[in-house]
Amino acid sequence: MTDIFETLESEVRSYCRTWDTVFDHAEGSLLYGEDGKEYVDFFSGAGALNYGHNNPLLLQPLIEYLQSGAVVHSLDMKTPAKRRFLEAFNEVVLTPRSLDYKVMFPGPTGTNTVESALKLARKVTGRHHILGFTNAFHGMTLGSLSVTGNSMKRRGAGIPLTNTSSIPYDGYLEGSGGDFQWLSRTLEDSGSGVDLPAAVIVETVQGEGGLRAARAAWLRGLAEICSLHGVLLIVDDVQAGCGRTGTFFSFEEAGIVPDIVCLSKSISGFGLPMALTLFKPELDIWKPGEHNGTFRGHNPAFVTGAAALRHFWADSDFQLQIGERSVQLHGGLEEIALRTEGAHVRGRGMIAGIYYPDPETAGKIASESFARGLLVETSGPKGEVLKALPALTIDPDALRRGLAILADAAEAVTGSIA
Ligand SMILES: Cc1ncc(COP(=O)(O)O)c(C=O)c1O
Image (tube, rainbow, N blue to C red; front, side, top):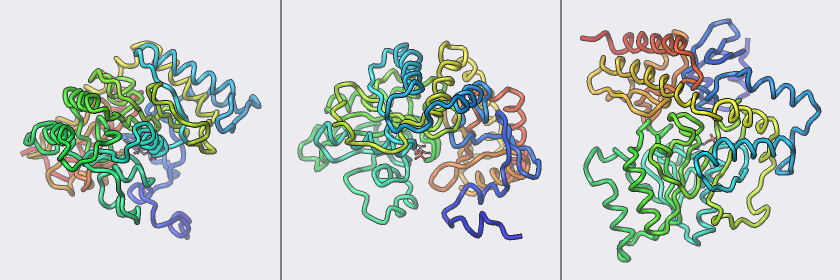
């Protein structure tokens, strides 16, 4: 029988190659193939499913909305669903954190919010240069690629990616070089040959680039230098935000207030496409329609997004639960890492994994895991880090089962403890 996924779909397809099955239905942290095989999900739609698959708390209001005859598509027109989302975001996220941000709907994906952030930073400062970090990942459109590290992805642009520079992320130089020695010197020195940047864009945990997690003090240092030189600080919270690291925004622990924040992936809560760009009010110098797009205001995503915020973030219970699950996740990963010399745990909260010195190991463990009923992917320029991204709502038993599969798969690949 011909396989239409292989005959018709482009060579560019990727996840369906690594996980070669047809996924049929899903519930919470479990996915089922057409053949009935069950998979524990440590992938969570690359971070778009922080509340699990088909969460009934979000599914129910979505079904009611769709059956009610309410407006589904409306670009950025006003709808009650959009009003309710903005009210929930303001009441549950911004106000309790004393964050004074304007909210922009830039188009539905992570790369859309990053593009809008870069554009706005250049427009506000009148400068062209943007600094990004080694091993960063910000998306696949040209602006986002220009601040992304991965050389294979960069080559895909087919044109020079200019007006940006890459500087060392926390831990990249393994202790040497001082945290911001180069950056502070070059920004102070008019003879440094480095154009004063419009902005610095940073992930607090590098989701695709190898799970390095920036220390809170490093993030504060970066924020201080930016503020001292009038350089805007953009935090790309597309993957690490929406609770992934334990707090709603991943930068809360560091106590910094970025000038611009990018959110997407789990902001709709249900895996529906949606993105937000947040910025300080004084930066809101956009002309009406200067950045637009057909799919900015997707009402079903507003409905599930508002329900997710009101249900999970109105008090601190969920945050405490994420903390407990993170301890369980890190404990399990530590045990697995101990089996292999030089392996160690990376990441923060529920975005965590294991770095392996042999770059082949993580990929082999991920394939063994799939064969045993667990979806888990790799991260890093050579795929050298095994990356676990369970739903934040995963129950302790499913988390234990997933970790047990991972431990078996690791043992099959690396051998048992000496
Ligand atoms: C930190 C970060 N920024 C931006 C993106 C791009 O998001 P999208 O794939 O929705 O364009 C990603 C995707 O993984 C990401 O991890």
